[in-house]
Length: 203
Image (cartoon, rainbow, N blue to C red; front, side, top):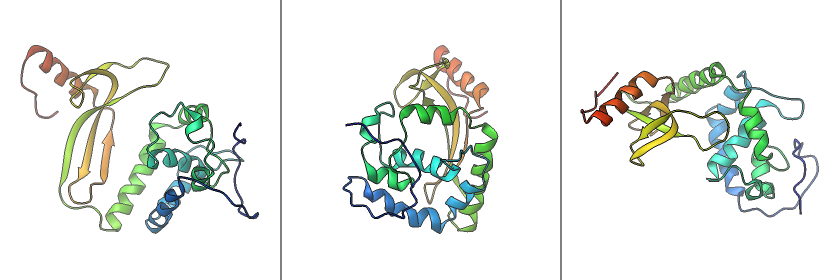
């Protein structure tokens, strides 16, 4: 049985369905309560006539919140109407759509949304006065252009990955800052580990 072609839902027709992912709908009050949906709608993220930017981002969020491990296996989500309903579509798109959409997203678009989210966290009193700072490597499992190998402390070896710096609010656990342009510092860490020298401790 093949899944339907992804299309926007208008909720005008009644429908009876079964799903193992209806728990995703519990996140709607959180998204709307903090105005995250408005921040996405006002962003510069790509959109088409059939898929506006909010539906598009909710498709990504549906997979993230449901802990789908292998984004290349369409069958894990393409048959689940509940996951589609979370994104206001009948079914989530195929894996190829996610790759295609991501290729049109720029660093500037992400930065704009992150700034909006930062303002939301601040206005809603979710950020404290201290943060945990961590330099890490984000593994890359996709195909295409190869990335450099960087040291992954979690796995104890070098992996094809993107070096990143993350700041997490110590009270709420919110990741309040992230950047993947800290390559120079990561290269210093890699050289220090290879030569047996202690880590520099900061850029």
